[in-house]
Image 1: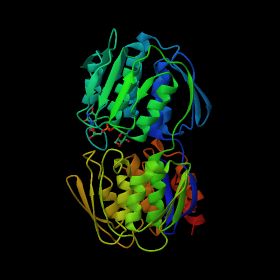
Image 2: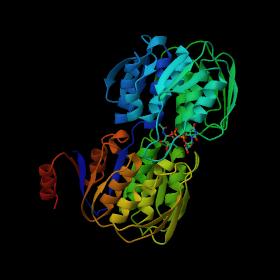
Image 3: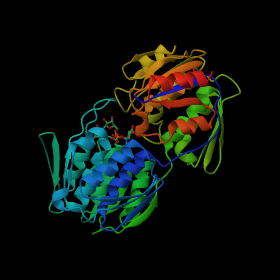
Image 4: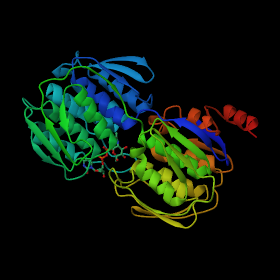
Length: 433
Ligand code: UD1
């Protein structure tokens, strides 16, 4: 079973180039099936989630031509109304396969997708997606674990989202883009990937205004044409490397980023004592000067502090002086990494959706298990901050969203390897003393 082995305890320094945003890619790839033309999509991260989405697209009859690891051509020309069934297999592997619901419903006026269940970070209802599709005139039926959405015509509507939801905003925006007439989505999510998916749809001929604000206005068009599009940089991958600098007392420049998307993370790290330098398309985090201090964090929809950065930040706070408080307000079960971090010496008490963290001066090395994608990356950071050898198992979660993670870490001076057997693990320990 693949795992990471690392010898931590040294400050990590240098430059790291950030890839395309995983979450934006999932929306953009799904949206690409909405045209019979050809879409050339660049800067797509080559990670498990995007690869599963491409398989799901092929599964409904979409044409996928991989140009290279980060570039793909997609066309929906061979998809028929009858083939718009997304196998439950894909939904089990990535929830975001449900973006095909909005995309297929918009273009083919029919989509059948397995109902996504809960997941490792808590129950995740999709009532707002369904509410949006119904408002557009679709008949949505849930039975036997499948969601079937069908319509003769989709008609624009005024939709108020009861919860700020990234997924529902993207899904409804896609379907509405090919509906007749105007749609207004109120209380829309404002995350950078909403803007990216809207920009991509507009590049195919959609008429969407206001993405990035909480009111999105969509004038439906009849059809889309092909397009060439490059995905935005990954806010969360960048943030992960920024917290790596902070946790190891290092100095890391994340390159090829949009600094504005990182403001909530930069601001918290600065508050804790890191020196932050912002450039046009890079951010440098220098944490070499002194021990960082405690702070309070509450996860919120964008532009608030992202829930996907909560575990990585906890790893830094657990090493910072004083008592910090993290309030998780988006997902109910996002402190599953705390037990593992406690085994490394962290002092964290969880009460409901609040974690109270008393800073310790160092972690001890340990053999740990990644509970999910972002928490997995956070535990690797903890292992790299701890002196001695640590291992992280269940790295398939991390591979869902981080491209060439160990390679990028090595480029910053980390002693880390991906090993697949006890023999390889022992070899690493003999080589790295
Ligand atoms: C997306 C991201 C995920 C991130 C999350 C919050 C992707 C592929 N995933 O997930 O990495 O952690 O945004 O930034 O982009 N909710 C409802 N009803 C709904 C939909 C959502 O009650 O119909 C609730 C959820 O339970 C949650 C909150 O709304 O408490 C936010 O969820 P949402 O923004 O939809 O997250 P995802 O799109 O699933």
